[in-house]
Length: 90
Image 1 (cartoon, rainbow, N blue to C red):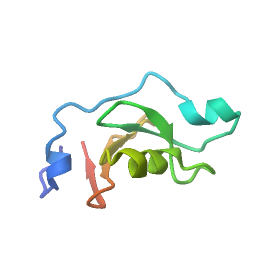
Image 2 (cartoon, one colour):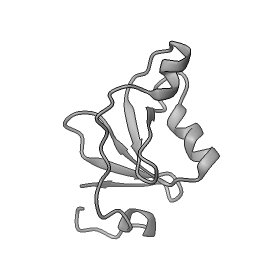
Image 3 (cartoon, rainbow, N blue to C red):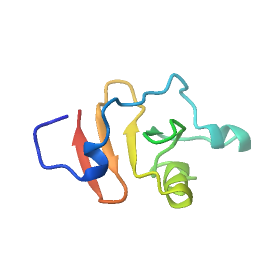
């Protein structure tokens, strides 16, 4: 991680979970489309971002309170803590 003050949730991430799945598991169930994908750093589920119509990753956060997500987009290396509204490159 970049050398900066980080919240406790981001500091707790020692290994970033990345997904081999390049689909939103929930959008697939309803035959919907997504814009970008995010991977939950607590449970590893990959879901769509807030630019997507269904905002499944934000719904996942509200249901589970799993705080940190990582971009699942190729070439992007960042984390976001929903609980503390904090961003970090890794």
